[in-house]
Image 1: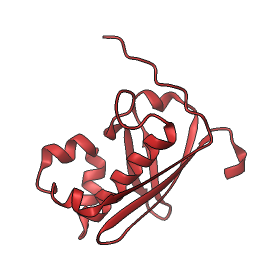
Image 2 (image 1 turned 30 degrees about the vertical axis):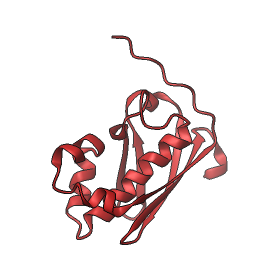
Image 3 (image 1 turned 180 degrees about the vertical axis):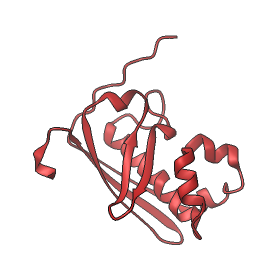
Image 4 (image 1 turned 120 degrees about the vertical axis):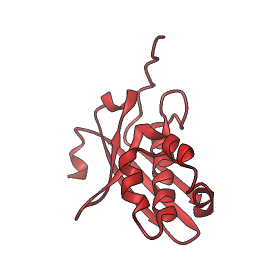
Length: 134
């Protein structure tokens, strides 16, 4: 099977997404669902929190926002688990890309937030050599 090369992203780019927390909350006991969407590291980080559904919903929104910023959506070239969102102590959330898009030289900036009912993420993707974000 030949792996198709993903389209080159046009950078800089912006992606935004909103998700209802309830969409994730109803699947908290469905490990197979969670493992299709989130990496083991994401699950380990979020499921230990008191409001795991809010943290997971914010990560879902981030994955969707990254896909929109790349211009592909989730699908043929980018899977949910290809976008990993982890918290760096003292620095906040960071995005790591796996899969075909991991080879593209880019830097990702993310802002995410959530309430009891809604999670949101805004993602900016810059060329790796863009000094305007230093």
